[in-house]
Length: 395
Picture 1 (cartoon, helix red, strand yellow):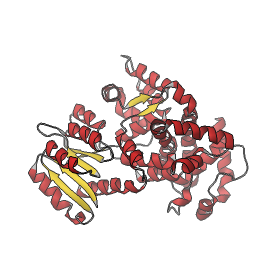
Picture 2 (cartoon, one colour; picture 1 turned 90 degrees about the horizontal axis):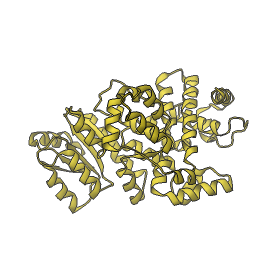
Picture 3 (cartoon, one colour; picture 1 turned 135 degrees about the vertical axis):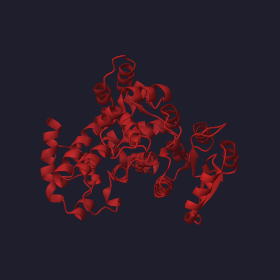
Picture 4 (cartoon, rainbow, N blue to C red; picture 1 turned 30 degrees about the vertical axis):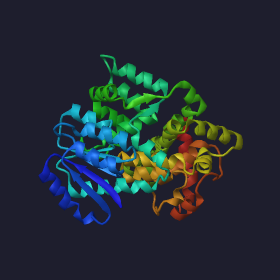
């Protein structure tokens, strides 16, 4: 049974949460505390799967509590629940919580957020890796991109367009900015799927404050970039995103599906960055083996680690609350037959884009998941999408 701790200094609100979540009492072990110290004392007795905390509390506030939870129980999912609108308080929360829900929170939204987050526990089974993923607050970027954005943000004449272009060029920055802009704090009426649009919406002042005060952006050193071929990761995602969008738009003529495909394609290899942080020696060895044996890295990852960067990336972005179609596309982009999909989805576009972008001039189907392609009955479309790929690559 999953154990969840709820913390709020308002006893009436806790009582309301208890009544609202009562239908889940047979699947969730729920505990309710009116202060951070009480919650930490309970957490010290045994681990919990999730902590949902109010932000504004006397003594120890929610940001401090979630920070301590991250240290004591790094695998716990951390959700901030608050009615605060003070940006500085929200920025403090960003480094310590996976998701932010605004009060008053719709009952169904709270239930679904918790249930979805808890369901992730089955994606990754190795506890040390699960702890590392859950404790991540920043994903390293390429040194060049990190230097450029820091220089731009520290300029008194920082350009929103320049900041947006830098963010869009970097996988780690893209993932983090998309998480932030789509959080409940900003309350946008629609999902933002473009990194450039997200950066433009947030603006240079907000991004400057977040980056300089919370450290959500960091950088790999040059040796790590070289040893693990991380330049290829960024270049690959920058090819896959636009191509996935073009394929989705060609087949569906639906802008939402196309935008989701673009977003998923841009961050499909974000798990590689996590593994580069968590298992750098293994990732260097995997890259070398891939070059020697001519096998894709994800297959070698599966053999050596028991999972691939796809599952790792999906776990992280799902923790961050990104939409299900994006999570599914990242999780299964190398093996879409493992999904339950029976129709064209962002996953379809990303899988095709991954294959075509890696070998745009090849006429065979090596690398395509033909079980999935035949399930969707889209094999006849491949040749047209190859032409789209060639046009996109040479554009």
